[in-house]
Image (cartoon, rainbow, N blue to C red; front, side):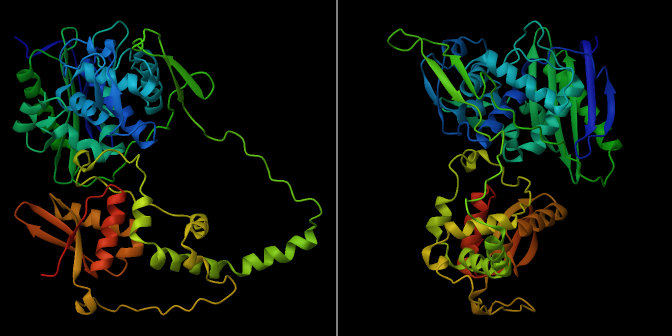
Amino acid sequence: MSALAAPYAAMVVDARSGEVLHSENADTPLHPASLTKMMTLYLAFEAVEHGELTMDTVVTISRNAAAEPPSKLGLRSGQKIKLRYLVRAAAVKSANDAATAIGEAISGSEAAFARRMNRTAKAMGMSRTTFKNANGLTETGHMSTARDMTLLGRHMIYDYPQYYNLFSRITTHAGMHEVYNTNRRFLGAYKGADGIKTGYTRAAGFNLVASAERGSERVVTTVFGGRSTASRNAKVAELMDLGFKRAKTRVALRAPGKPPYLGNRGLGNVEVARSADPSPDGARGKTIRVVSAAVTRSLRPQSRPGASSAEIAPLVASVESDIETVLASVQIAEESAVSEVEIAEAVPEAVAGDASDVAPNASIKPVRRPQGILMAAASAAPAEAQAVPVSAPVQETQEVVTRLSTSGGRHWGINVGRYPSRYAAEKVLLKTALMETSTLDGSLRKVIDRSSGFDANFMGLSRETADLACRRLQARQVTCFMIGPS
């Protein structure tokens, strides 16, 4: 008997470049089953990123969500639970009730959420996919392809790396009780496997989008139509081996372009959605969700009455001549006058979840700050910093560092994670240094070979600088801890 049920489809790609290494029936529309939840979770991460809700948002479970068939977390109508637990249940246990509740929390109803899923899928380039629900239960017209699901898998890895560790958890607590990963057999059996999502319905068979990393190579494999968990896993392992055999050792990373944020769309910039359940007093309520406050048209400011060009020109010349002085003043204000309390207050509460839901070795993207932001920072700086006269020259003694020394208290450091290879650790150190130049400038990047991996450290810092650097990195969701003098 064949190990795979008809219809069958498969695709293998190099995750780094998107190069197709193998495909069979990759564009045939098939039932995706719970692979659908990858898009549900993707939109949950997107909603948190854009401040629609947070991982601590309390969701009230609707009658519709509670009534979903297994696999399920066991949610009850009217129950209140944090979004983070719904996300864990959907990612790890593949809970249908949790997935439906996520969709309703974001868009007000599952139908509205399905429309958002389809908009995002189209923006990603998933041209043969149509979603009808948030969980993947069989429904007429709810179809996708191996190619589209493989593309979605790459987006899960590269667009929200801080959450990707969810898919490799063998077990996790989902608020009500401990849940176990539906993909734990493959994760435990295949070297380097770290996700992503299983799916099963009678119409679909046993589906899996899987990813594995070995050294600098990462492969994503998708299989539709397995006859059983064991035979599907065996086929995926076979295709993974094929992928690693064909993948090049060194490939320039070409991550898929992150789709534009589309949010919820309804009546203008506001979507009105009827609640799935009546309120306790029997009246049906409605939720008004503000979708976007983006400015759609910018008007040119008008000159003040009576202000001639002759009067304005000297002011412009004065400002231009003092730009360097202003920037220097702001730099001083930023580096020496901002207190730890102000830094803590600057961290947005909407940053996704707590540290338990963030990968310790998530990829880091350097951030460029335009000069305009430095200028704007002048108004937010403390009064003492603002008191520096614009026209007065700024006296600043610059220290030229020719080599690092442990003298002067510069014998502290910080650790930004442990990685499977020296290359990975050095890459993270370089990206972190580019991101946090104000505190890490002049520090020594050092990789330490441990039995369990390679530690990425910055050394040669004072205790105060190390503490400040860690605070600033943690505000960007980068794992960091201080290293004291040895």
